[in-house]
Structures are given as structure tokens and as C-alpha cells.
Image (cartoon, rainbow, N blue to C red):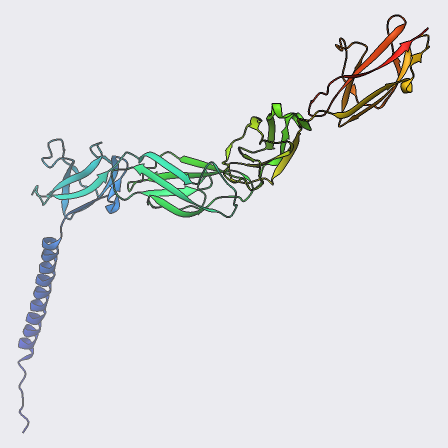
Length: 412
């Protein structure tokens, strides 16, 4: 069964419609106002420093301030605002100066609305650090002043004095630090590859940065890359003297090698029991006992421990003078009738290198001459009569023989 509904009179219907529209509009306005009131009530004033940075290396900073329905504000580095003045609200304040002292800093901001009501205070914190890391250091960990391997990776020691535990270092083989990045400092940097593989001085640079961005001075350390050993190694004994007597068994060595800083000397080629020593051009050396060849060995090296081949020199120890000596005047003739007293000498001596001939037994005015077995023009001196010719010999070692002589009668 369908129940009939009777609508009100048209006039009454219009009044109901207008009433409904009014009620809906009122509720809408009330809801909007309530939402706007809640927004104001829930909003808070805020201040940040340098867009929320935790550190700054300059006391001059930028403040970002967010507040609603605010007319004036005060800014101060002190909570009591004793040094602050009321200024018109602005969302950004450039060049605000913090207290110029390293350490944690706080900025305070308070507000007034259009009715002069004091609003909630806002604060922001930042750490001011104007001091870069001090006493920066870098050390290349190699033995000596040079390395000889162009592929060698080296260890670096880096450090600086910094109040913050976390700080950074940048290391480079170039002063420009091109394409290098900051990294957290650790006391050691392993396996650092030096620059060019060409021989020469290799420099490693370092600089340090704290969390505020302060950068230290640039420091460096250097090492020499030397892949080439010393050149032209040489050892000579007594300036190349071939022999000497046992009585002069202490000799002087002359030692040279271009680029060498150390040398090792021995009378055996395995250098057993000998140690490296700083290079010297001249060195006194005592030879071993006994006659015969004495050979000495030398090797040189540079700061990078590049070594030369072994070089050697020898000298003979000879304590025996020339022997089997003989001198004959004019083939053994008894007399000579040469008007100028010229005679011929035949000479023999084993191991002789030099000889001295004289008409006097004391060899006064005599000179050592190269050994030869025939002298065709020796001059006798003085009046007619018995004449003697004296001779003695010397070997390479300087051993001298006794004097021998022969006689002839000069008749003119």
C-alpha cells in the first residue's frame, strides 16, 4: 500500500529551502573558522641557522625564521635579550654575527603579534670553529731517502692537531690536488702510488679540513725514485802501481762511482764479514801477508740501494830483488884504446825493470833508467888506467839489488 505524502504549501516550501541554505552556509563558515583557528593554534615559530648546518667557520651567518601572524621580533645571542631591539618581522636575516669565539653557539628569537601579544621563543644551535687543524704532517714511510722500484706502493703517515675527533685529509701527488677527494683521517694511508714512473724527486702533498670547513696549510714530503744504479765504478791500488815490497804492504785505494753513496770493500768477491760504509774517494788498506798477487774487490750502491757490478784491482807483493845479474865491458876485453873513453856494456838481470849505472861505487849523481841489455856509448872518466863500471837494478815493487861491476884498462 502506497502512502501519499502531502507536500507543504508552496510558500512554506520556499521558507524551508531558505532555512536549509542558511543553516548549511553557517555550518560551512563555522567549520572553516574552526579549521583556521586550529591551524594557528598548532603552528609554531621556528629559526634555523645556515639552513640547518651544524658547523660554521665564520661568525657571520644567515637566519631563516618562520612565524605566523607576527609583527615584530627580537634576535639575540643571549637568552635575556639584554642587547636586543624590536624589529619588523622578516623571514630571512643575513649577516647575523655570532659571539666570535670557537664553540657551541645559540641564537634566540622571540615575537609579538599585531596585538602586541608576546609569542613563544624560538632557538637554534650551531658550532662555530674558526681555527683550522694545526701542525699538519705527512711522512712517506720508506727506508732512507730513495726507492728503486717505480711500481712500489708506499705507506703515508698523516696527522694534525684538531679539537674534533672527526676531521678530513686530502692527499695528492700535485699541489693543485686536482680530482682528489676529502677522506676521514686515519693515521696511516696504505698503498699510495707515487706519480710518474720516471726517475726523480716524488712529492706527496696533504692538507687537512675540520667539520666546519677550515683548511690547514699544505704540507709535503718527498722521496727520490732512482731505478738506475751508480755508474762507472772503479777501484785502483796505489794509483795503479803494479807491485810493491812487503815492507810497504799498506796501500791507498782510490774508489769512484757516479751517484754512489755507499761502498763495500773486501779481499774476497763474496764480501763475507764486510759491511757497507759511506763512500770515500781515498781509503787506506792493509794487504794480507805473503808475496804474490793481492786482489781487492769493491761494490757501490746509492740511496735507493741500487748496486753496481763488482769491480776489482790487483797489485803484486814482491820482496825479492832482481837476481842473476851481470855486466860486461867491451865483451870482456882487458883494455880499451878509445880516444874518448867510450865503451860498450852488456847487461843481464832477472825481474829487473830499472837500472842505475855509474863510474862511482856510491852512484853519486846516478839516475834510474829503464832496464836494457845493451849500452853502446858509456863514457869512462878520468886519466888512463884501471876503470870500473858499477850497476844495480830495481824491480816494479821497488826492490833494489846489490851493486855489481866490471873492469877495463883505459889506454889512450
